[in-house]
Image 1 (spheres, rainbow, N blue to C red):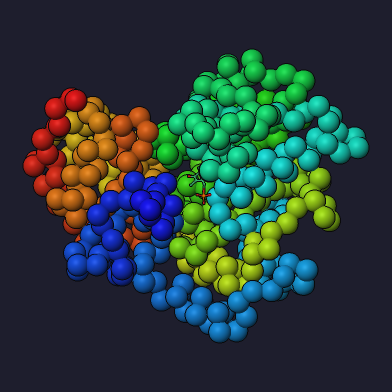
Image 2 (cartoon, rainbow, N blue to C red):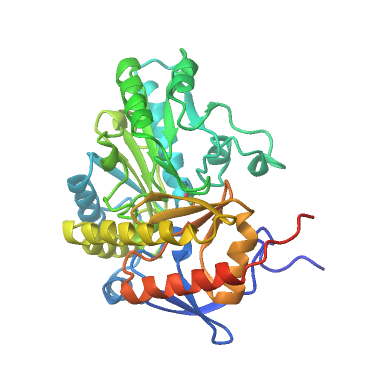
Length: 397
Ligand SMILES: *Cc1c(COP(=O)(O)O)cnc(C)c1O
């Protein structure tokens, strides 16, 4: 038998964390890493946040799980908070990002498949290099062939458009179009923010043709960009929004947010989840929202984001052969490299104990916990500078 007990779908590296302390991870043999990956934009509050731990401990001891067949004071409270703080009128809780996007897709289709709707509108227009998750519907929603290989047939109902190309998006609208599904800032695709004109254009097209604008804010949402959700910075509102990653601060939680109009098809019996929104998850989500969904916290994220960005821009000027530019919003930053970003990300990890995340378009993702302070920012630049100084670009194979 050569297959490993853990199904070998991940190329796991040698870092084997066993403990977290604020913005650091400590691995099996005691090595400390500065964590500017945050479990891929998940650990917003770092690794040992007392409020989050306390909320989970207390809820675990009180009531962990009950069925969604019962009333949920815990779910009502978190849903109310999300409704108060966003465009949404209603919320469905899930356990992951992919499920939140699935719910968004179902919500958009169901909107049109109502009595006074147009049932042929089943198709969502999605965008190149998007990432929406790993379920059948969410891989079908992405044009990335590496995620399709081995899993044919894909689900019908998705049409791919060039990201940030409004003219093309407009030209793809037809009698079968149900709406758009788009990340306002592509994460896996390389921290690529959509332009203001593109987001406004999509909103206008949706209004004009009665289409659903569904945003995938699984990575860019929950205070990451310095507003609770990234759409706020574009000055538009979606009809549907998928959120996850940071919303549980490390506890598996996602949600699909929608307006009352958009959710008109999501009635009794149409959708469900056994675990979705259970009391334990709600306690985690409430602790995260209490910490991040306030002006003071968000202003700090913006300020820290600006500070890191300014320093990064100065820094990359010292290595014009390695780095091209810095992009992103708030504490969702990407350094686009002129060479392959993956070996540099490995170099930072293995030789300088700095954890970042590689992404598409030769970009290095910088996704620190939102609670970083001056000490962690200085440590980040020390490690990054040392890493760039000691880096030798590998010879092309
Ligand atoms: C991570 C991610 C997902 C999938 O989330 P999972 O929790 O892994 O299912 C979907 N969309 C975006 C934009 C993501 O970054």
